[in-house]
Length: 156
Image (cartoon, rainbow, N blue to C red; front, side, top):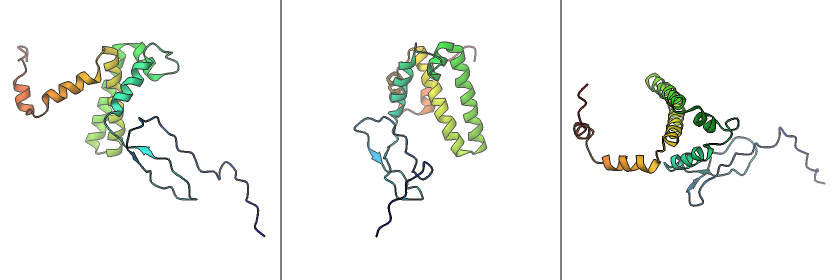
């Protein structure tokens, strides 16, 4: 006679993976299986640069909202000087990790730099498409030639 199934405790149940909102057309890739009992894994979205556009939309939507419930709203409410200070702090932390050769920390700090840059764009009214257009304009141009074409600073 088969044994009745044991009731599972909270510790026995596999943790549910957090699902993030993704565009319907985004390509998917499977996550690596975890050791232990067989579980059905949710698919993670493939990382693409359009994540920056989505982040911009989220930060923009936080402008003017309650600073007590959103870090982006809190930064935007504190003004451009505080946003610039935070961006600078994150950039320095990124540089420190790069020089130290800490690849994983460099990735993490790079994400922080990009987030704070986007907060600065939102505050200044800069749209990502404007930055992408400038990068496109520069594409295929030698960095040396591009810099030489800039107006000269008489104080430099």
